[in-house]
Length: 259
Length: 312
Image (cartoon, rainbow over all chains, first blue to last red; front, side, top):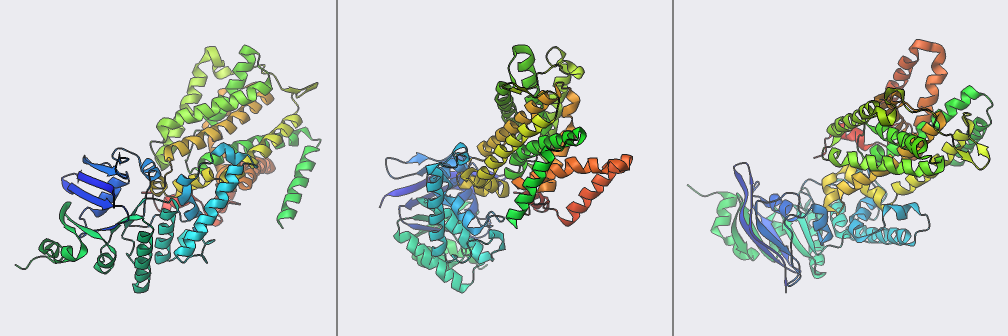
Protein backbone atom coordinates (compact mmCIF):
# COMPACT_ATOMS: atom_id res chain seq x y z
CA UNK A 1 0.00 0.00 0.00
CA UNK A 2 1.16 3.50 -0.74
CA UNK A 3 0.70 6.59 1.31
CA UNK A 4 -2.01 9.00 0.13
CA UNK A 5 -2.09 11.59 2.88
CA UNK A 6 0.67 12.72 5.20
CA UNK A 7 0.15 15.46 7.76
CA UNK A 8 2.94 16.69 9.99
CA UNK A 9 3.38 19.42 12.57
CA UNK A 10 -0.06 20.90 11.98
CA UNK A 11 -0.94 23.65 14.46
CA UNK A 12 -3.90 25.98 14.74
CA UNK A 13 -4.83 28.29 17.59
CA UNK A 14 -8.03 30.20 18.14
CA UNK A 15 -7.03 33.05 20.40
CA UNK A 16 -5.19 31.37 23.26
CA UNK A 17 -6.81 27.99 22.69
CA UNK A 18 -4.78 25.37 20.88
CA UNK A 19 -7.23 23.63 18.56
CA UNK A 20 -4.43 21.61 16.99
CA UNK A 21 -0.92 21.25 18.37
CA UNK A 22 1.76 19.68 16.16
CA UNK A 23 -0.61 17.07 14.78
CA UNK A 24 0.73 14.23 12.63
CA UNK A 25 -1.49 11.86 10.70
CA UNK A 26 -0.98 9.40 7.87
CA UNK A 27 -3.39 7.53 5.67
CA UNK A 28 -2.52 4.66 3.35
CA UNK A 29 -4.42 4.40 0.11
CA UNK A 30 -7.57 2.37 0.62
CA UNK A 31 -7.56 2.60 4.39
CA UNK A 32 -10.21 3.89 6.76
CA UNK A 33 -8.61 6.04 9.42
CA UNK A 34 -10.73 6.91 12.43
CA UNK A 35 -10.27 10.19 14.26
CA UNK A 36 -11.80 10.16 17.69
CA UNK A 37 -11.70 12.32 20.76
CA UNK A 38 -13.95 14.19 23.17
CA UNK A 39 -15.84 17.34 22.15
CA UNK A 40 -13.52 20.24 21.41
CA UNK A 41 -10.58 17.96 20.74
CA UNK A 42 -9.88 19.59 17.36
CA UNK A 43 -11.26 16.90 15.06
CA UNK A 44 -13.35 19.18 12.87
CA UNK A 45 -10.59 21.80 12.88
CA UNK A 46 -8.31 19.14 11.43
CA UNK A 47 -10.81 18.50 8.61
CA UNK A 48 -11.17 22.22 8.00
CA UNK A 49 -7.39 22.52 7.64
CA UNK A 50 -7.20 19.61 5.20
CA UNK A 51 -10.07 20.88 3.06
CA UNK A 52 -8.77 24.46 2.99
CA UNK A 53 -11.66 26.01 4.91
CA UNK A 54 -9.26 27.38 7.52
CA UNK A 55 -5.54 27.93 7.27
CA UNK A 56 -3.30 26.50 9.99
CA UNK A 57 -0.36 28.48 11.35
CA UNK A 58 2.19 25.84 10.62
CA UNK A 59 2.62 22.30 9.40
CA UNK A 60 2.46 20.36 6.19
CA UNK A 61 -0.29 18.47 4.41
CA UNK A 62 0.99 16.29 1.59
CA UNK A 63 -1.56 14.61 -0.61
CA UNK A 64 -1.07 12.17 -3.46
CA UNK A 65 0.71 8.96 -4.23
CA UNK A 66 4.49 8.77 -3.80
CA UNK A 67 6.33 10.94 -6.29
CA UNK A 68 3.21 12.85 -7.26
CA UNK A 69 2.40 14.20 -3.82
CA UNK A 70 1.52 17.89 -3.53
CA UNK A 71 1.31 20.36 -0.66
CA UNK A 72 -2.25 21.37 0.13
CA UNK A 73 -1.63 24.21 2.54
CA UNK A 74 -2.51 27.61 1.14
CA UNK A 75 -4.89 26.23 -1.47
CA UNK A 76 -8.52 27.32 -1.53
CA UNK A 77 -11.27 24.76 -0.81
CA UNK A 78 -12.31 24.55 -4.47
CA UNK A 79 -8.74 23.84 -5.54
CA UNK A 80 -8.39 21.12 -2.93
CA UNK A 81 -11.64 19.53 -4.07
CA UNK A 82 -10.30 19.50 -7.62
CA UNK A 83 -7.31 17.48 -6.43
CA UNK A 84 -9.59 14.70 -5.30
CA UNK A 85 -10.69 15.38 -1.73
CA UNK A 86 -14.37 15.46 -0.83
CA UNK A 87 -15.95 16.02 2.54
CA UNK A 88 -19.18 16.03 4.49
CA UNK A 89 -20.07 18.32 7.35
CA UNK A 90 -20.87 17.70 10.97
CA UNK A 91 -23.87 20.02 10.71
CA UNK A 92 -25.31 18.92 7.39
CA UNK A 93 -24.76 21.44 4.60
CA UNK A 94 -27.05 20.47 1.76
CA UNK A 95 -28.67 22.87 -0.69
CA UNK A 96 -32.14 22.65 0.87
CA UNK A 97 -34.10 24.29 -1.96
CA UNK A 98 -32.68 22.02 -4.63
CA UNK A 99 -33.99 18.56 -5.36
CA UNK A 100 -32.16 15.55 -4.01
CA UNK A 101 -31.07 14.68 -7.54
CA UNK A 102 -29.66 18.17 -8.15
CA UNK A 103 -27.80 18.06 -4.85
CA UNK A 104 -25.97 14.94 -5.94
CA UNK A 105 -25.55 16.01 -9.58
CA UNK A 106 -23.85 19.17 -8.45
CA UNK A 107 -21.37 17.02 -6.54
CA UNK A 108 -19.96 16.08 -9.94
CA UNK A 109 -19.17 19.75 -10.64
CA UNK A 110 -15.42 19.15 -10.70
CA UNK A 111 -15.86 16.24 -13.08
CA UNK A 112 -17.64 18.38 -15.68
CA UNK A 113 -16.33 21.23 -17.79
CA UNK A 114 -19.15 22.84 -19.79
CA UNK A 115 -18.78 26.58 -19.34
CA UNK A 116 -21.55 29.16 -19.35
CA UNK A 117 -21.32 30.14 -22.99
CA UNK A 118 -21.70 26.50 -24.01
CA UNK A 119 -24.94 26.34 -22.05
CA UNK A 120 -26.30 29.21 -24.17
CA UNK A 121 -25.87 27.13 -27.28
CA UNK A 122 -28.83 24.71 -27.42
CA UNK A 123 -26.99 22.21 -29.62
CA UNK A 124 -23.84 21.82 -27.54
CA UNK A 125 -22.83 18.14 -27.51
CA UNK A 126 -20.74 18.52 -24.38
CA UNK A 127 -23.56 20.08 -22.37
CA UNK A 128 -25.93 17.26 -23.24
CA UNK A 129 -23.36 14.54 -22.65
CA UNK A 130 -22.44 15.94 -19.26
CA UNK A 131 -26.07 16.37 -18.24
CA UNK A 132 -26.81 12.79 -19.14
CA UNK A 133 -23.69 11.56 -17.39
CA UNK A 134 -24.22 13.51 -14.14
CA UNK A 135 -27.88 12.45 -13.95
CA UNK A 136 -26.93 8.84 -14.46
CA UNK A 137 -24.15 9.07 -11.87
CA UNK A 138 -26.43 10.79 -9.36
CA UNK A 139 -29.18 8.22 -9.81
CA UNK A 140 -26.67 5.40 -9.36
CA UNK A 141 -25.30 6.94 -6.15
CA UNK A 142 -28.77 7.66 -4.78
CA UNK A 143 -29.67 4.08 -5.45
CA UNK A 144 -26.59 2.97 -3.52
CA UNK A 145 -27.55 5.02 -0.48
CA UNK A 146 -31.14 3.83 -0.75
CA UNK A 147 -32.83 7.07 -1.76
CA UNK A 148 -33.87 6.33 -5.34
CA UNK A 149 -37.49 6.99 -4.38
CA UNK A 150 -36.70 10.51 -3.14
CA UNK A 151 -34.88 12.00 -6.15
CA UNK A 152 -37.44 14.72 -6.92
CA UNK A 153 -38.06 15.92 -3.37
CA UNK A 154 -36.30 19.00 -2.09
CA UNK A 155 -33.35 18.08 0.06
CA UNK A 156 -34.64 20.20 2.94
CA UNK A 157 -37.79 18.07 3.21
CA UNK A 158 -35.93 14.84 4.01
CA UNK A 159 -35.38 13.38 7.45
CA UNK A 160 -32.07 13.90 9.21
CA UNK A 161 -30.75 10.43 8.43
CA UNK A 162 -31.75 10.75 4.79
CA UNK A 163 -30.05 14.14 4.53
CA UNK A 164 -26.84 12.57 5.79
CA UNK A 165 -27.07 9.99 3.02
CA UNK A 166 -27.64 12.67 0.38
CA UNK A 167 -24.56 14.48 1.62
CA UNK A 168 -22.55 11.27 1.39
CA UNK A 169 -23.79 10.65 -2.15
CA UNK A 170 -22.97 14.24 -3.08
CA UNK A 171 -19.42 13.87 -1.80
CA UNK A 172 -18.99 10.62 -3.73
CA UNK A 173 -20.25 12.25 -6.94
CA UNK A 174 -16.98 14.17 -7.20
CA UNK A 175 -15.24 10.79 -7.48
CA UNK A 176 -12.67 11.60 -4.80
CA UNK A 177 -9.53 9.72 -3.83
CA UNK A 178 -9.91 10.83 -0.24
CA UNK A 179 -13.20 11.21 1.57
CA UNK A 180 -13.49 13.16 4.83
CA UNK A 181 -16.54 12.14 6.83
CA UNK A 182 -17.41 14.33 9.81
CA UNK A 183 -19.56 12.31 12.20
CA UNK A 184 -21.60 10.51 9.55
CA UNK A 185 -23.37 8.38 12.17
CA UNK A 186 -24.49 11.27 14.38
CA UNK A 187 -28.23 11.20 14.86
CA UNK A 188 -28.70 7.88 13.09
CA UNK A 189 -30.67 5.05 14.68
CA UNK A 190 -29.27 1.57 15.14
CA UNK A 191 -30.42 0.18 11.78
CA UNK A 192 -29.17 3.22 9.88
CA UNK A 193 -25.84 2.97 11.65
CA UNK A 194 -25.44 -0.68 10.64
CA UNK A 195 -26.23 0.27 7.06
CA UNK A 196 -23.64 3.06 7.14
CA UNK A 197 -20.97 0.69 8.40
CA UNK A 198 -21.72 -1.77 5.63
CA UNK A 199 -21.53 1.08 3.15
CA UNK A 200 -18.14 2.23 4.46
CA UNK A 201 -16.77 -1.29 4.12
CA UNK A 202 -18.01 -1.38 0.51
CA UNK A 203 -16.24 1.89 -0.20
CA UNK A 204 -12.98 0.56 1.20
CA UNK A 205 -13.23 -2.41 -1.10
CA UNK A 206 -13.30 0.11 -3.95
CA UNK A 207 -9.94 1.52 -2.82
CA UNK A 208 -11.39 4.77 -1.53
CA UNK A 209 -9.42 6.27 1.35
CA UNK A 210 -11.54 7.60 4.20
CA UNK A 211 -10.87 9.77 7.22
CA UNK A 212 -13.69 9.24 9.65
CA UNK A 213 -14.51 11.48 12.59
CA UNK A 214 -16.78 9.61 14.91
CA UNK A 215 -17.84 9.64 18.50
CA UNK A 216 -19.45 6.28 18.47
CA UNK A 217 -16.93 3.55 19.31
CA UNK A 218 -19.31 0.92 17.99
CA UNK A 219 -18.83 2.44 14.54
CA UNK A 220 -15.14 3.27 14.74
CA UNK A 221 -13.79 0.00 16.13
CA UNK A 222 -15.18 -2.46 13.59
CA UNK A 223 -14.57 -0.46 10.39
CA UNK A 224 -11.35 1.47 10.94
CA UNK A 225 -7.90 0.18 10.00
CA UNK A 226 -6.17 2.68 12.22
CA UNK A 227 -7.37 5.17 14.80
CA UNK A 228 -5.94 8.49 15.89
CA UNK A 229 -7.09 9.97 19.18
CA UNK A 230 -7.11 13.72 19.74
CA UNK A 231 -7.63 15.51 23.02
CA UNK A 232 -7.34 19.27 23.49
CA UNK A 233 -5.58 19.58 20.16
CA UNK A 234 -2.97 16.95 20.98
CA UNK A 235 -2.56 13.53 19.47
CA UNK A 236 -2.65 11.28 22.50
CA UNK A 237 -2.71 7.91 20.78
CA UNK A 238 -2.42 6.28 17.36
CA UNK A 239 -2.61 2.68 16.25
CA UNK A 240 -4.92 -0.17 15.38
CA UNK A 241 -8.34 0.06 17.04
CA UNK A 242 -7.73 -2.67 19.60
CA UNK A 243 -4.55 -1.19 21.11
CA UNK A 244 -5.98 2.33 21.06
CA UNK A 245 -9.05 1.15 22.90
CA UNK A 246 -6.89 -0.21 25.70
CA UNK A 247 -4.56 2.79 25.85
CA UNK A 248 -4.71 4.32 29.35
CA UNK A 249 -4.45 7.88 27.93
CA UNK A 250 -7.51 7.30 25.81
CA UNK A 251 -9.52 5.85 28.65
CA UNK A 252 -8.48 8.82 30.77
CA UNK A 253 -9.51 11.34 28.10
CA UNK A 254 -12.87 9.73 27.62
CA UNK A 255 -13.78 8.73 31.15
CA UNK A 256 -11.52 10.82 33.36
CA UNK A 257 -9.30 9.36 36.07
CA UNK A 258 -10.18 8.22 39.51
CA UNK A 259 -8.95 10.61 42.11
CA UNK B 1 -53.05 25.43 -19.02
CA UNK B 2 -49.50 26.47 -19.80
CA UNK B 3 -50.32 26.62 -23.49
CA UNK B 4 -53.36 28.78 -22.91
CA UNK B 5 -51.36 31.19 -20.73
CA UNK B 6 -48.67 31.64 -23.33
CA UNK B 7 -51.32 32.07 -26.01
CA UNK B 8 -53.03 34.80 -24.02
CA UNK B 9 -49.64 36.35 -23.39
CA UNK B 10 -48.83 36.35 -27.11
CA UNK B 11 -52.19 37.88 -27.95
CA UNK B 12 -51.69 40.74 -25.50
CA UNK B 13 -48.24 41.34 -26.97
CA UNK B 14 -49.64 41.45 -30.50
CA UNK B 15 -52.48 43.78 -29.51
CA UNK B 16 -50.10 46.08 -27.66
CA UNK B 17 -47.93 46.24 -30.72
CA UNK B 18 -50.78 47.48 -32.93
CA UNK B 19 -52.15 49.89 -30.34
CA UNK B 20 -52.31 53.22 -32.20
CA UNK B 21 -52.32 55.34 -29.05
CA UNK B 22 -48.90 57.03 -28.66
CA UNK B 23 -49.25 57.52 -24.90
CA UNK B 24 -49.93 53.85 -24.29
CA UNK B 25 -47.19 52.87 -26.74
CA UNK B 26 -44.75 54.85 -24.67
CA UNK B 27 -45.82 52.91 -21.59
CA UNK B 28 -45.29 49.61 -23.43
CA UNK B 29 -41.79 50.64 -24.46
CA UNK B 30 -40.97 51.73 -20.90
CA UNK B 31 -42.31 48.44 -19.53
CA UNK B 32 -40.17 46.55 -22.05
CA UNK B 33 -37.08 48.52 -21.08
CA UNK B 34 -37.69 47.72 -17.43
CA UNK B 35 -38.31 44.07 -18.27
CA UNK B 36 -34.90 43.90 -19.92
CA UNK B 37 -33.29 45.55 -16.92
CA UNK B 38 -35.10 43.19 -14.56
CA UNK B 39 -33.86 40.17 -16.51
CA UNK B 40 -30.30 41.39 -16.08
CA UNK B 41 -30.63 42.15 -12.38
CA UNK B 42 -32.29 38.77 -11.91
CA UNK B 43 -29.03 37.07 -12.92
CA UNK B 44 -27.24 38.94 -10.13
CA UNK B 45 -29.86 38.87 -7.38
CA UNK B 46 -32.01 35.90 -8.33
CA UNK B 47 -29.44 33.45 -9.68
CA UNK B 48 -26.27 34.36 -7.79
CA UNK B 49 -28.02 35.73 -4.69
CA UNK B 50 -26.06 39.00 -4.64
CA UNK B 51 -28.18 41.83 -3.29
CA UNK B 52 -27.11 44.61 -5.67
CA UNK B 53 -28.42 48.14 -5.11
CA UNK B 54 -26.33 49.96 -7.70
CA UNK B 55 -27.75 48.46 -10.86
CA UNK B 56 -28.76 51.85 -12.27
CA UNK B 57 -25.05 52.70 -12.46
CA UNK B 58 -24.46 49.85 -14.92
CA UNK B 59 -27.48 51.06 -16.90
CA UNK B 60 -25.82 54.51 -16.93
CA UNK B 61 -22.50 53.10 -18.12
CA UNK B 62 -24.30 51.52 -21.08
CA UNK B 63 -26.19 54.70 -21.93
CA UNK B 64 -23.15 56.98 -21.69
CA UNK B 65 -20.97 54.54 -23.60
CA UNK B 66 -23.24 54.67 -26.62
CA UNK B 67 -23.81 58.42 -26.26
CA UNK B 68 -20.08 59.16 -26.19
CA UNK B 69 -19.15 56.69 -28.94
CA UNK B 70 -21.89 58.14 -31.09
CA UNK B 71 -21.27 61.83 -30.42
CA UNK B 72 -17.46 61.75 -30.36
CA UNK B 73 -16.59 58.99 -32.78
CA UNK B 74 -19.76 58.78 -34.84
CA UNK B 75 -20.36 55.12 -34.06
CA UNK B 76 -23.72 53.85 -35.33
CA UNK B 77 -26.23 52.31 -32.93
CA UNK B 78 -25.62 48.72 -34.00
CA UNK B 79 -21.92 49.00 -33.14
CA UNK B 80 -22.69 50.93 -29.99
CA UNK B 81 -25.06 48.23 -28.71
CA UNK B 82 -22.45 45.49 -28.11
CA UNK B 83 -19.91 48.12 -27.01
CA UNK B 84 -22.33 49.42 -24.37
CA UNK B 85 -23.03 45.89 -23.20
CA UNK B 86 -19.32 45.15 -22.94
CA UNK B 87 -18.56 48.40 -21.11
CA UNK B 88 -21.31 47.81 -18.56
CA UNK B 89 -20.25 44.18 -18.11
CA UNK B 90 -16.71 45.36 -17.44
CA UNK B 91 -18.01 47.98 -15.00
CA UNK B 92 -20.08 45.31 -13.26
CA UNK B 93 -17.05 43.07 -12.82
CA UNK B 94 -14.64 45.84 -11.80
CA UNK B 95 -17.01 47.24 -9.19
CA UNK B 96 -17.76 43.70 -8.10
CA UNK B 97 -14.12 42.86 -7.41
CA UNK B 98 -13.93 44.83 -4.15
CA UNK B 99 -17.67 44.57 -3.39
CA UNK B 100 -17.99 40.77 -3.25
CA UNK B 101 -15.51 40.59 -0.42
CA UNK B 102 -18.54 41.27 1.75
CA UNK B 103 -21.89 39.49 1.79
CA UNK B 104 -25.58 40.07 2.30
CA UNK B 105 -26.59 43.44 3.72
CA UNK B 106 -23.02 44.71 3.54
CA UNK B 107 -22.86 43.94 -0.15
CA UNK B 108 -26.10 45.89 -0.61
CA UNK B 109 -24.55 48.91 1.11
CA UNK B 110 -21.31 48.72 -0.88
CA UNK B 111 -23.09 48.39 -4.24
CA UNK B 112 -25.41 51.25 -3.28
CA UNK B 113 -22.31 53.35 -2.64
CA UNK B 114 -20.71 52.41 -5.93
CA UNK B 115 -23.92 53.23 -7.77
CA UNK B 116 -23.97 56.69 -6.23
CA UNK B 117 -20.27 57.20 -6.96
CA UNK B 118 -20.83 56.56 -10.66
CA UNK B 119 -23.76 58.96 -10.75
CA UNK B 120 -21.78 61.66 -8.96
CA UNK B 121 -18.79 61.15 -11.23
CA UNK B 122 -21.01 61.42 -14.31
CA UNK B 123 -22.58 64.60 -12.92
CA UNK B 124 -19.21 66.22 -12.27
CA UNK B 125 -17.21 65.10 -15.29
CA UNK B 126 -18.65 67.97 -17.29
CA UNK B 127 -16.06 67.94 -20.04
CA UNK B 128 -17.07 64.41 -21.02
CA UNK B 129 -20.64 63.89 -19.90
CA UNK B 130 -22.05 67.41 -20.06
CA UNK B 131 -22.50 67.32 -16.28
CA UNK B 132 -26.05 67.80 -15.01
CA UNK B 133 -27.20 68.95 -18.45
CA UNK B 134 -26.32 65.59 -19.91
CA UNK B 135 -25.65 64.77 -23.54
CA UNK B 136 -27.90 65.76 -26.40
CA UNK B 137 -28.35 64.89 -30.04
CA UNK B 138 -27.64 61.18 -29.76
CA UNK B 139 -28.46 59.37 -33.01
CA UNK B 140 -31.58 57.24 -33.27
CA UNK B 141 -30.91 53.86 -34.84
CA UNK B 142 -31.92 52.86 -38.33
CA UNK B 143 -32.28 49.55 -40.11
CA UNK B 144 -31.49 50.03 -43.82
CA UNK B 145 -33.83 52.78 -45.02
CA UNK B 146 -36.06 52.63 -41.92
CA UNK B 147 -35.18 55.29 -39.38
CA UNK B 148 -36.36 54.70 -35.80
CA UNK B 149 -36.96 58.37 -35.01
CA UNK B 150 -38.85 59.48 -31.90
CA UNK B 151 -41.81 57.11 -32.25
CA UNK B 152 -41.68 54.48 -29.46
CA UNK B 153 -42.95 51.58 -31.63
CA UNK B 154 -39.68 50.53 -33.29
CA UNK B 155 -37.89 50.67 -29.93
CA UNK B 156 -40.61 48.51 -28.46
CA UNK B 157 -40.02 45.97 -31.23
CA UNK B 158 -36.25 46.09 -30.75
CA UNK B 159 -36.64 45.65 -26.98
CA UNK B 160 -38.92 42.66 -27.60
CA UNK B 161 -36.20 41.00 -29.64
CA UNK B 162 -33.59 41.73 -26.95
CA UNK B 163 -35.94 40.45 -24.22
CA UNK B 164 -36.63 37.27 -26.17
CA UNK B 165 -32.94 36.49 -26.59
CA UNK B 166 -32.06 37.47 -23.02
CA UNK B 167 -34.93 35.49 -21.51
CA UNK B 168 -33.99 32.41 -23.54
CA UNK B 169 -30.36 32.76 -22.51
CA UNK B 170 -31.31 33.22 -18.84
CA UNK B 171 -33.56 30.15 -18.85
CA UNK B 172 -30.78 28.06 -20.34
CA UNK B 173 -28.22 29.43 -17.90
CA UNK B 174 -30.47 28.80 -14.91
CA UNK B 175 -30.61 25.08 -15.59
CA UNK B 176 -27.02 24.73 -16.74
CA UNK B 177 -23.97 23.62 -14.78
CA UNK B 178 -23.21 27.28 -14.01
CA UNK B 179 -26.82 27.94 -12.99
CA UNK B 180 -26.72 25.07 -10.52
CA UNK B 181 -23.39 26.31 -9.21
CA UNK B 182 -24.88 29.78 -8.65
CA UNK B 183 -27.74 28.22 -6.72
CA UNK B 184 -25.27 26.19 -4.66
CA UNK B 185 -23.14 29.22 -3.78
CA UNK B 186 -26.32 31.14 -2.93
CA UNK B 187 -27.67 28.41 -0.67
CA UNK B 188 -24.46 27.39 1.09
CA UNK B 189 -21.22 28.99 0.01
CA UNK B 190 -18.97 26.85 2.19
CA UNK B 191 -20.42 23.58 0.92
CA UNK B 192 -20.26 24.90 -2.64
CA UNK B 193 -16.59 25.76 -2.39
CA UNK B 194 -15.83 22.34 -0.88
CA UNK B 195 -17.48 20.86 -3.98
CA UNK B 196 -14.98 22.63 -6.21
CA UNK B 197 -16.86 25.82 -7.02
CA UNK B 198 -14.92 29.05 -7.22
CA UNK B 199 -17.49 31.28 -5.54
CA UNK B 200 -15.64 34.49 -6.41
CA UNK B 201 -15.44 33.68 -10.09
CA UNK B 202 -19.10 32.64 -10.21
CA UNK B 203 -20.22 35.87 -8.55
CA UNK B 204 -18.14 37.98 -10.94
CA UNK B 205 -19.61 36.08 -13.87
CA UNK B 206 -23.14 36.90 -12.70
CA UNK B 207 -22.17 40.57 -12.29
CA UNK B 208 -20.67 40.57 -15.78
CA UNK B 209 -23.73 39.01 -17.42
CA UNK B 210 -26.10 41.26 -15.46
CA UNK B 211 -23.96 44.26 -16.44
CA UNK B 212 -24.05 43.26 -20.11
CA UNK B 213 -27.85 43.27 -20.10
CA UNK B 214 -27.97 46.61 -18.26
CA UNK B 215 -25.57 47.99 -20.89
CA UNK B 216 -27.81 46.88 -23.75
CA UNK B 217 -30.79 48.48 -22.04
CA UNK B 218 -28.81 51.67 -21.45
CA UNK B 219 -27.82 51.87 -25.10
CA UNK B 220 -31.42 51.46 -26.30
CA UNK B 221 -32.54 54.03 -23.74
CA UNK B 222 -29.96 56.60 -24.91
CA UNK B 223 -30.84 56.00 -28.56
CA UNK B 224 -34.55 56.27 -27.86
CA UNK B 225 -34.37 59.45 -25.78
CA UNK B 226 -31.73 61.19 -27.83
CA UNK B 227 -30.80 63.00 -24.62
CA UNK B 228 -29.50 61.56 -21.38
CA UNK B 229 -28.93 63.24 -18.03
CA UNK B 230 -27.63 61.81 -14.74
CA UNK B 231 -31.15 62.06 -13.25
CA UNK B 232 -32.28 59.10 -15.34
CA UNK B 233 -29.89 56.83 -13.42
CA UNK B 234 -30.91 57.78 -9.93
CA UNK B 235 -30.87 55.32 -7.01
CA UNK B 236 -34.65 55.03 -7.34
CA UNK B 237 -34.15 53.23 -10.68
CA UNK B 238 -32.09 50.54 -8.93
CA UNK B 239 -34.80 50.19 -6.32
CA UNK B 240 -37.58 50.00 -8.93
CA UNK B 241 -35.81 47.26 -10.88
CA UNK B 242 -35.08 45.35 -7.69
CA UNK B 243 -38.74 45.68 -6.68
CA UNK B 244 -39.74 44.23 -10.07
CA UNK B 245 -37.41 41.27 -9.62
CA UNK B 246 -38.68 40.56 -6.11
CA UNK B 247 -42.34 41.14 -6.97
CA UNK B 248 -42.16 38.83 -9.98
CA UNK B 249 -40.25 36.13 -8.11
CA UNK B 250 -36.50 36.01 -7.60
CA UNK B 251 -34.85 33.72 -10.10
CA UNK B 252 -37.97 33.15 -12.20
CA UNK B 253 -37.44 34.38 -15.77
CA UNK B 254 -41.13 34.82 -16.72
CA UNK B 255 -41.74 36.11 -13.19
CA UNK B 256 -39.38 39.05 -13.37
CA UNK B 257 -40.76 40.06 -16.78
CA UNK B 258 -44.25 40.01 -15.28
CA UNK B 259 -42.99 41.98 -12.28
CA UNK B 260 -41.55 44.64 -14.58
CA UNK B 261 -44.76 44.89 -16.58
CA UNK B 262 -46.92 45.13 -13.45
CA UNK B 263 -44.77 47.78 -11.80
CA UNK B 264 -44.59 49.83 -15.00
CA UNK B 265 -48.26 49.62 -15.87
CA UNK B 266 -49.96 49.78 -12.47
CA UNK B 267 -48.71 53.31 -11.64
CA UNK B 268 -50.19 54.45 -14.97
CA UNK B 269 -53.52 52.76 -14.23
CA UNK B 270 -53.57 54.51 -10.88
CA UNK B 271 -53.00 57.92 -12.44
CA UNK B 272 -56.53 59.07 -11.67
CA UNK B 273 -55.71 58.86 -7.97
CA UNK B 274 -53.02 61.48 -8.65
CA UNK B 275 -51.14 62.13 -5.43
CA UNK B 276 -52.18 58.83 -3.85
CA UNK B 277 -50.95 56.58 -6.62
CA UNK B 278 -47.49 55.84 -5.23
CA UNK B 279 -49.10 55.26 -1.85
CA UNK B 280 -51.50 52.76 -3.43
CA UNK B 281 -48.66 51.05 -5.27
CA UNK B 282 -46.82 50.72 -1.99
CA UNK B 283 -49.90 49.23 -0.35
CA UNK B 284 -50.35 46.71 -3.16
CA UNK B 285 -46.73 45.63 -2.83
CA UNK B 286 -47.01 45.41 0.93
CA UNK B 287 -50.05 43.14 0.71
CA UNK B 288 -48.41 41.02 -1.94
CA UNK B 289 -45.30 40.54 0.15
CA UNK B 290 -47.49 39.60 3.11
CA UNK B 291 -49.43 36.91 1.27
CA UNK B 292 -46.95 35.86 -1.37
CA UNK B 293 -43.41 36.63 -0.20
CA UNK B 294 -41.85 34.49 -2.93
CA UNK B 295 -43.22 36.85 -5.59
CA UNK B 296 -45.82 36.30 -8.29
CA UNK B 297 -44.12 33.39 -10.04
CA UNK B 298 -41.16 32.52 -7.85
CA UNK B 299 -40.42 29.61 -5.55
CA UNK B 300 -39.43 30.34 -1.97
CA UNK B 301 -36.25 32.24 -2.47
CA UNK B 302 -32.83 32.33 -0.93
CA UNK B 303 -33.00 36.03 -0.19
CA UNK B 304 -35.87 35.60 2.21
CA UNK B 305 -34.47 32.54 3.82
CA UNK B 306 -31.26 34.38 4.58
CA UNK B 307 -33.23 36.82 6.69
CA UNK B 308 -34.30 33.99 8.95
CA UNK B 309 -31.08 32.02 9.00
CA UNK B 310 -27.86 33.91 8.28
CA UNK B 311 -25.42 31.96 6.10
CA UNK B 312 -22.45 30.82 8.14
